[in-house]
Length: 217
Image (tube, rainbow, N blue to C red; front, side, top):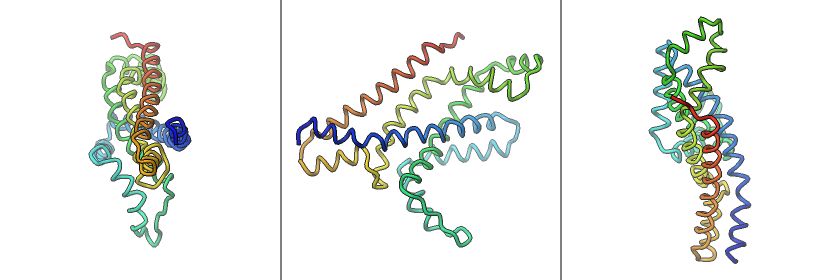
């Protein structure tokens, strides 16, 4: 098999990666925003629970979390019912929860960087809490943490390679199969090129967003 054919073979696995990538974003971003808002709130119990949650999911390997959700949950008896998830369902849930933990900390830091006077000014102007957060505070916080969000977006595209442990076909799994059959390094080189291109596209996207939303401090 030629290098071009191997490259095409690896490209065929990209739909699985893209679906997981988009699903993770749609699941983790709302959780991250809501978690960050709750974290800066007044309820200490919620703060404590969120700190434990972020500590667990940021402090353990994503691969281990995948294995626990997919292979471990079915072993637990929940009042006579066992949770059985498909490989892709387990991956989406695990990635979403894992990345939400990181986003909570990132967005929280952005929210806490906003001057307290802006909260008070918006309140005096008659804005409701929801309006203050969605129209004034949150947009500024997101702009300030764009570089960190960009790093997480690039990390996510690389982390999708871990789903091979659930026997889901993606770039790395197919790469190993091709390398094992043809005993060549070419599949690995093709995989490197694919990941570099995907990372470059995401990096350029966030760089453009940063330029158009540059925060003047």
